[in-house]
Structures are given as C-alpha cells and as structure tokens.
Length: 308
Image (cartoon, rainbow, N blue to C red; front, side, top):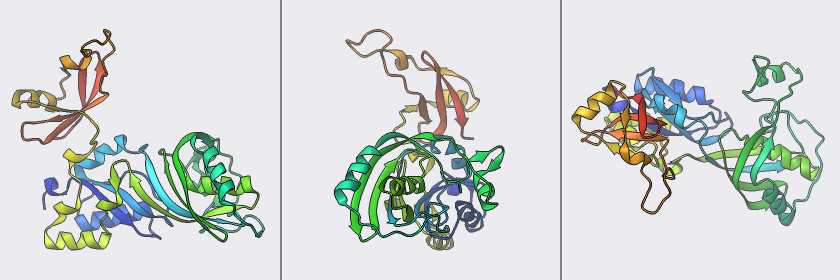
C-alpha cells in the first residue's frame, strides 16, 4: 500500500480505557506506517471522536489543535474526586443532593461565553518543567493558573437523581472535567465527570467514525480509502486557489506569490477594507492539494506547508 493511499485523517471511535497515544500506536500497526498523530488528546475514560492523522496529514495538526469541540456527558453530584472524573479517588464526603433544573440552567448560562478555568491537577499542563499529573500522583501540591476558554453552548439534557446529562460545545483547551468540578463547587455538593463522549472536533463528526477493528478489516479488504478524510477535504472553510502547471512548480519550490484580488476591496467598499484570507489551499488543475499558503503582507502569500 502506498503513502498516497494512506495519507488523510481517520476519525476513530476511541473506546474507553485507551489513551490517545494507545490509539496512535495501534494505528501504526494496522496501517504499517510510523507517521501517525492525532488532533487533540482525549482522556482515557472518554470515548468518541479522535481524529488521527496519517502520513502527509500529520503536518496539518497545527491547524486543528485549538479547534472547536463538542461533547455529551454525565455529571455525578454528591462528591468530588481528585481527578475530577470517575477514575479518581473521592476528594470530599458524599452528601445527599437534589438537583433543580432551573438552578442548573441558570448556572449553565453563567458558564457560557469566555470564562477563566483552572485545569485539573491531573492534567498534562506543565508546572516548573514537570507534568501536573506527575506531581499529583506523588501527592505533591499542584497550583495551576486559570486560563481563558470559551463555552459556546452548554445544554441540560436531563436530570436523573444525582446524575445530570449535558451537551457542551467549547474551545480547544477546555477541560470538561473542570466544568463538572466547578458546577459541584457552586452548588456546594461536590461533583465529578461520570461519563464523557466527544461528538465533534472541528469539521469531524460522529457520522465519520470508524472503529479500530473496522479499520483493520478495511485494510484486509483493500478498502481503507473509504475510511479516511482525504487531504483535499481538510480545512473546508479555507478559500481555495487553483493554479496552473507553471505556478504549481513555483509553489512546490516554496516561492512566494502575489494574489492581486486578495487586497482588492469590493465595489463600494473603502480602500483597504477588503477581507484578506489568512491561509489559502493551493490546488492544481487536477484538484489535488499542493500547499497551504499563509498571508504575508498586502497581496503576498508564502507556501508554508508544501506537499511533495
């Protein structure tokens, strides 16, 4: 099987119990290639959408690591845990609690928008050169600074006793575990994340999911191409520029080029007010992706990522 057959993004349905690194390792064996990465870590106990990049697609990680994400999950109220999820040890006394939907909805409204969020002690954030989870496992104090994240939507799906079902859309870097922990603190009951499933990352959704077993079967059947998102389909909101053979060769050699229309304002617009695309997908006449070019200044673009 050639590299061209493999290059792309595979939307893996990550099972519970595997780390994102575990999935990458299994993908390397299934596809028999070393060039495998992923577009954003998913906690071991969580399931769902894990975009895994293969071969040439690994170079696209820079465009996806801070992408918008969507989740569905369950928060268990009554006590908190040291990891902020169901895999940890209880960190507070269990307390009986009654959940009021109106109160929850009001809190969800308060937590929607740009907020400051403190990452969990058991996280990959670095503290004085060490991962926070390494210090937490040694029962050493972990003090992490709050970071700004954005909650685009937070929806209450149902309440069943001490469990709350929810859906959330948020910016990259958001810890849903911290969201559950903070809700518990606000209500005074303590809480932790009991279940979590990622339903979307950027343009990748559950409709594109393939299991590791399904991918292995597709490799055996020679139908792996149907399991991947091709390079040309990545960054669907990015403007495309189709070039001829001569221009293609210049782009492939990393030469800057000028796009006159990029800086030309529309009819009736004030000079200099035209929208300039930050990046462009450069396509050849066969509609194959040649490069991703980044805006430099004025109408000048530079091919930062060239596919050879």
